[in-house]
Image (cartoon, rainbow, N blue to C red; front, side, top):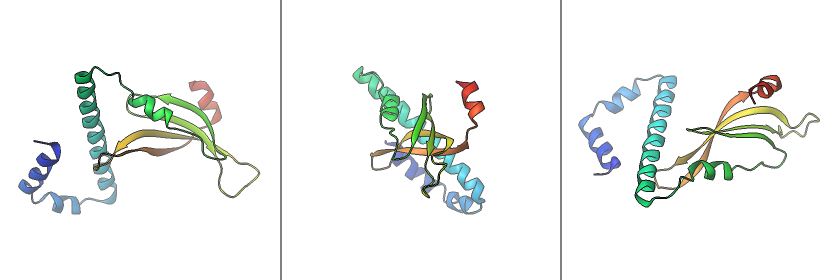
Length: 140
């Protein structure tokens, strides 16, 4: 039985699930979504790992993320660091107002491959904020 079939059956057995979600605050809903996305990534990763083991193919998941990251016009990618759950990007970017101080930053992002219900995937960028130059140079 597929994960989707199990999930659908679980929702039918728990009719109060939607009602409990309706009672959550906006912040609590965000946390539920983050948790669900993490679970989906972990399960997708386990499924891909199992498929690779069966096919004896090397992992290309992280390479595919960093290989798909390119600077947009006016951007400057300062660093790309592979992590186990995401790819860390530090970049400078233009503000869109063509000011004399562009590009701005550096800014920190976590990027990971997100698989959609239809099986397609895309890069999901999570903006974490400004990185000070002194912090960035002492970490590296």
